[in-house]
Amino acid sequence: MHDLTPLTALGTQTPAVETIRGVTLAEVPNLALASVAARVGYETACEKNLADLLNAPTPEPGQYRATEPETAFWIGAMQWMVMAPFDTHENIAAMIKSRLGDTASVTEQTDAWVCFDLSGQNIEAIMEISCNLNTRKMGTGDAHRTSIHHLGCFVLNFGPEKIRILGPRSSAGSLHHALKTAMISAL
Image (cartoon, rainbow, N blue to C red):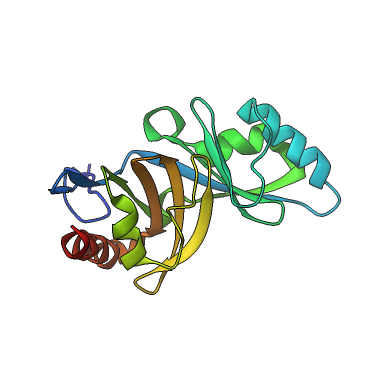
């Protein structure tokens, strides 16, 4: 039998946490993710089923809905990404598929993305260096796709001092370096 050790997207056993002048960049490895795309002809049923799963309306363009334990954000026309704690949602795609049935195509995304939380005061200055989003105008509940260091990323505003960034796991090191460099430059 194999004796495997789980590693974070940055290749370590413990998540990376960097704090510079009161701002923290923390790798968040314990998320399960799945994408949901409504099937043609089932858009209304899919949206209703997803809303039932979330116990809230589905997110509109540029938004996310944080419910316990799932959070969903809009990624395209009749498409959403759902994230939840890995400990309780290891099989998130199967869990969602069982609720949405034939109304949606559900794809496992957990190992495709790396997640970083940026928290503290003046995080907007870091984001201004990192991407073209006007994070100063983003409110809690906003979610947008942008490019950070030439990587397609999602940015979710979790409040006045917390932003969540999801980027391609295959470029986790580059994204981490870009965000850390922006922290050093901005602060």
